[in-house]
Image 1 (cartoon, rainbow, N blue to C red):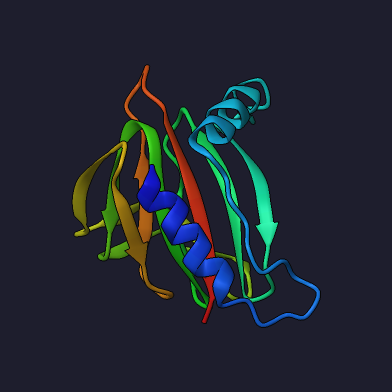
Image 2 (image 1 turned 30 degrees about the vertical axis):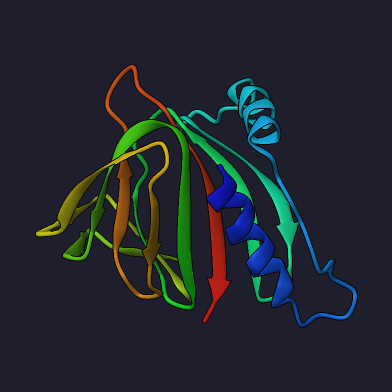
Length: 153
């Protein structure tokens, strides 16, 4: 967990917006508490999130998933995930099946064809560059809690 605090403090040190805080810290206990609160706020799609901070060109949220998400591509945002607890599989690359534009810079789809699948567990940290298809797949009866850092490109 010290590496998470270091990651967050390093990210906070690079803030350029004058009215944004220059340092933010979310402890492991904070993440656990917010994760418990999110469990009561799950959408019908099995996901709940809470924004932790908006730092201008990047933001932080805590995300709880109990079901697989759709395939997504963020054309102008990179994702960094810090897995807090649970497990899931992440599919990256490949081609989005049945793509639709949910906004001018966001694509969603049913699945990913020919992507690489990796298993995620607590402590893993990953980056997904802008423009890369990705999908989080949660097995029945499982869940994953992670910090999602979105960085404008």
